[in-house]
Image (cartoon, rainbow, N blue to C red):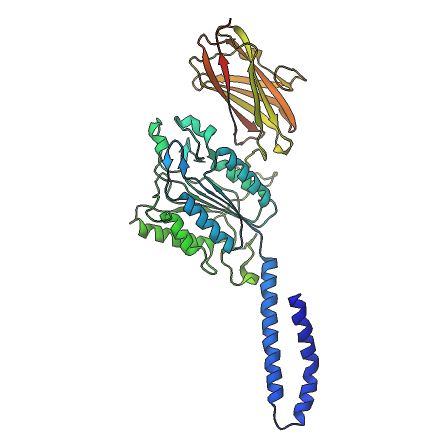
Length: 470
């Protein structure tokens, strides 16, 4: 309405100008003309400014951010800065036009749900930013973000208790939006690894990413970052210092951050980035008409880009897309045909639901015995799978292969064909015999989507209790 009001009055002023010029020719004084022209120039300038501001708001790409700050770790103790870090980053991003979702002291389930929602928003296009402050660990070359309730007594627990960075990268790649920035202030001195056989410090070296992604680490691979003495960590403090600098390209910004952190920590902490962004992006844009769009193609890019070859490409260094579930399957039920100790040939039933919104078929399940007084052995040749829940057998499901790793007490079941979304299935594992000791036995389930490169989804833990028969 205000724009129309100004345009209307500008038109009236324009129409009246000839009339004022005629009057001025009959008067010795030109004061009226000068004043009128000044008024015209003033209104014209204001209108241009208003239209430019409105157009900037319209043409600016959608900006979406997910911020996670984890501090109150139940097993590892409290971290001082992550909540402050997350709140301050969220505040700055909102001021810069980002639509921000903020999670603090998040569980694994909350992190998974938050990232699922974030991925849906990225699919609408624009620029995405993911920020995590808290504990991060590496295991077997993979990086994981640790939720507050995680129990990481052994290194192999990580894949069940923490969120893999690779899965986040896969979700971002699949969204296919123009540009993504991932900031991980998650390399603090980690108490979880003290009881592990292989105690790797910090996070692993950056993995190759898809085109249009910048991943920023608070310190170099294998090194530890400082939590900081002030309100924020040294890394996040430096980001907050530079993120609102007008027209500062994001890659140049992180160079400035690196210099600031080096100075603050006396050279003990060196931030690290890997980037496949194409073109330039600045957080604080003062001239949106020139810089608000992240380029999708540039004749001579100034950064290294990772491209995804077409299906017909003969390149030997093909980038393989990571498969993942858009919505996680659920582990609904665990029961046994008998809960009495020492009963032979007992069947354990594991019921899994693959939701319609998973969007990816289920290729494999891993069932692992976590706790118990004895190791339970299974007759793998007797393994069955069918549609339905519990012991109510429905249509049989074809199993391609069943194997067992005795060291990790894990049974792997591969389906062929893979299980389509919107189905509930049950796996029946035939135990050679129930344990001879009474007590609680825990089983974890991992689900793997269809694909040559896939990210497992932890479905959680359920218990079986065995007791003496009456």
